[in-house]
Image (cartoon, rainbow, N blue to C red; front, side):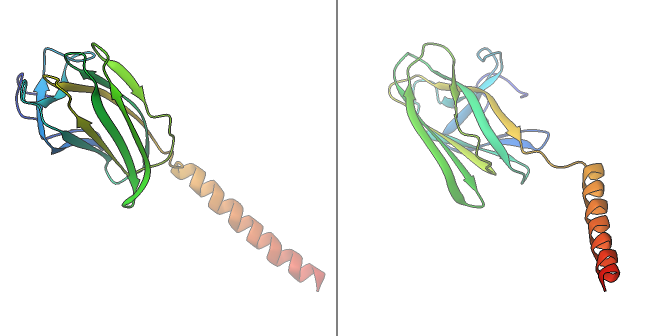
Length: 167
């Protein structure tokens, strides 16, 4: 992240991974984080429900965890919704009242192309989000694909040769 404390947050991209503010008022924090910086749902003292959307450049990934800090120690509601091709794959909801950051694990390894993190405040001055962890689905290397193609071609050729020998 670049900018200053309390700057509006709209989008951040790192490689193909993109986090986008979808609803609510999201801001940047350069004095808080696990470690700094992070983003938070605000505005401070006037917080409303909000959500962010996470994508991986059109690829699929599995959501692992994120760090959440509902300030003031009261229950903040959260929902993680993972979708693939527009269909809901999972929805995980709960509340967190940990003072400081806590790591919320997804417990789900399903492949998705979009993750929406929705937060519902309950008296917090803000809710901070940091360290969104995911793993990218493995894509075979070109060399592996070539070997698979050659193996398939060899098997097809062997089948044709053995069919002629049987006649």
